[in-house]
Length: 469
Image (tube, rainbow, N blue to C red; front, side, top):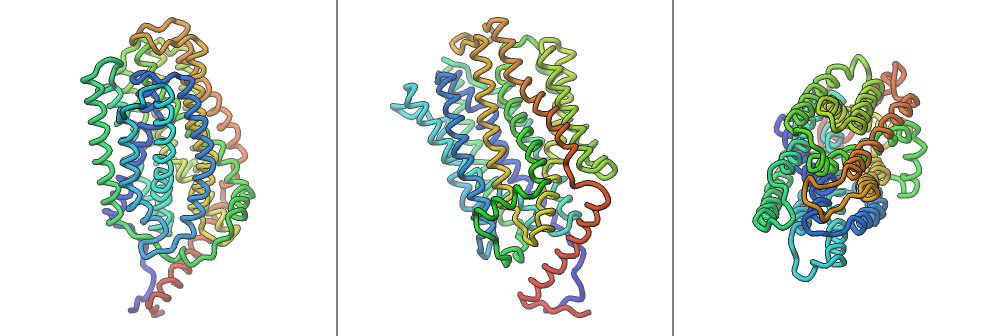
């Protein structure tokens, strides 16, 4: 086999679409579990106390601190004909879907407080283990199937388009089939819908693995031991600063999606203009950040969306009962969601590129794992903060929808958006010290592109290709 030169890298359209579709499918299920439906279902439908539910999320956060970096390390060292990531997606999908379905089953004998506590906790452990394996693999797949930033960007655009559904679908479920306590027909329909919906998502995740292939040359690198690899992440200054915004976005997205289930139940504002404002902010934000990333740079763009997001949160926390202020807040939420979907993966790619510049190794898996080690507890903390503040302000889960006291309504607003607003403003400040920006960084990126070409050529030659100059 011969070739005269390495051609300009292109990722097939089918590969871009299927990677993005699978990624969105996983994210939708995770959003329903971590940012809305699950807590509402156990607390408001089945009657699990807010205290027990908060403890579940705190215990779950401990497991998150263990499994994410461990899986990242294992996946970086995986060697197979399918690659380092594809096996986990293909063979993990059925178990992932089964665990999701188990959340919604009313298992005989577990209708006590202790029984529901155990069911929620154990299934969360299984679900998240598979979520970590699959979502991490899909998150870093653009770096596995493509070498150039241009080719990776062609995947990110499609991921952004599909990631809109990770916001829209949970919101649609919340507005249409959210069950009420005592509505047996509605609860039964909700359970069946969630199960069948999960099966559909699972089919998409499994099928996607037949439409993309990894670049295998990275499997040839000799990876360091776990502790060395773990510590090296924290000697990368750009990673440390990146984790501030990464943690914040995970916390904010969880809190905002979860709080919607309570906000529209108890605060008398019309939902339609707020959802339209949110959609307008997301669509406008996608176009804004895609078009301004190059002239403004990833650093400045990320700082600006953090600030806009923070202003939106503070507008809602102080004036969330006013439809005009809430509409403005929701529009800024959309701008922030769009920035998080597009710019955070771009920033993460730069952080991993800097690591390669420093160490000579591609370690996307380890970085993704350590990133989750830091950020996934934000899911638990966001749930716990919301439930704790609501309870402290007198929220009564036994009352019918719309019957909470004014004080409890205030607790919902504070628990929902006050802490996210503070974290987003702190991220805006912290990103001042993010180092991957400017001409020197662009020069390093150009050098890495040449290194990638050389690595690919070396790998292809090892597979029998001969290059004719």
